[in-house]
Length: 127
Image 1 (cartoon, rainbow, N blue to C red):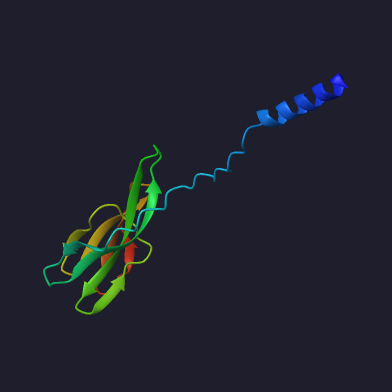
Image 2: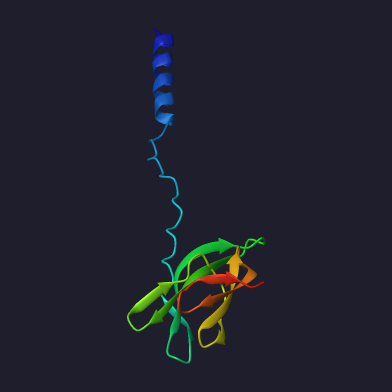
């Protein structure tokens, strides 16, 4: 009988040693991405045509340094023309009264140079 009491006490002690169950901790969620940058004026041409940075994408250099690469839009009065497929990380340069020039960027690094007609918005590689 003493043995039976000892076994019961031991089982009770083991149950008490378990402690209270801790609530499950949810997995840590990554922070939400920052909001995209606001549209910003990149260049005003002599005739009043404006070049704006609009859409963007996040990029990372070969050394792990993040950057933002932007798309440009030509604005003339109520008219808007997006310059397609030309992400850049630097302001465009004025070539003449109808043409701008910009470096295309990939992974935070400038590459080929494109000239863009502000009449059509079409980029053409020049080097």
